[in-house]
Length: 157
Image 1 (cartoon, one colour):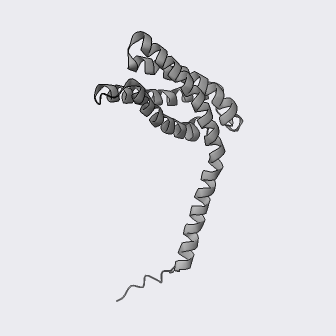
Image 2 (cartoon, one colour):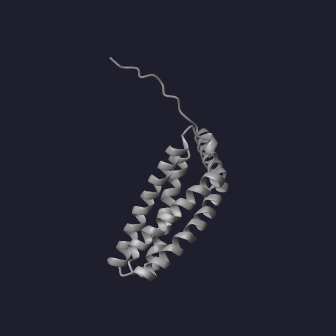
Image 3 (cartoon, rainbow, N blue to C red):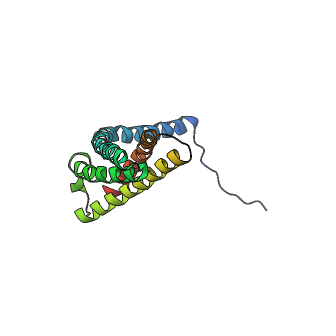
């Protein structure tokens, strides 16, 4: 006795290639649509980072504790970043979230960035012997990308 499993439809190479091209086109379109928002976010981040570094350098020069200075600078940057982000980067009107909830999520995402910042600075200065300024630059880059992804997909979604 033989079991007939039926015939499977076969896809041509051209159909598969067309599907892949459509997928890639869709993904590239979504990426291109994100470029203006990412550019505004980068500008806002640069301003917040300038405040962050100003506080960091001032405190580190005064108290000589790079990790604490990095945390204080980052916290000041978070407050400035939120105000600018909600006005210039993200469409807060498109969200059903309350302002209080959105601010709470923003701060929570900032705390993730803060943990990354503190960890990178502590590791780079303590374990690798890197200068505090270089450690701060490394921390800023890592937290920038991670926090943007969180804010775009969760906080302001």
